[in-house]
Length: 142
Image (cartoon, rainbow, N blue to C red):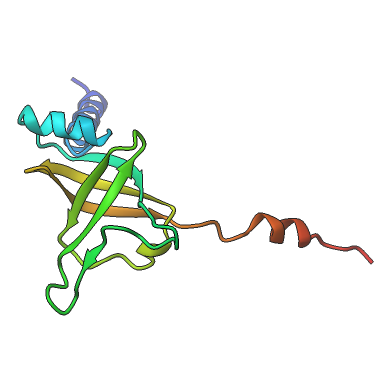
């Protein structure tokens, strides 16, 4: 065999190894219902859930539990997924900055004992620009 053939086969083997190792870390987007079903079946792979924070009439987040003086690495809240199913979420890290300003939340983790244990929290914060400000901010040419 030529050295070029051996080199190409080695590159292909490395590429296959990389693909198979990263495929195990991939997670899917599911609802809380599917996350519960996966946990009931014994499937504890990580999943993504997209949802919104329930708010009261004054736009305050309901169900928020965080006391940094008692335990700075325990943060719990309620999240309502896209199917309008509310679920208690526990995050064993400090509360993310600007959590109360977020419009949408994406959590990564798995269900454990009727509680979703999150490993990561991604926040979608409100738009930097308000529609009225964008319309009024047109450039003028002199």
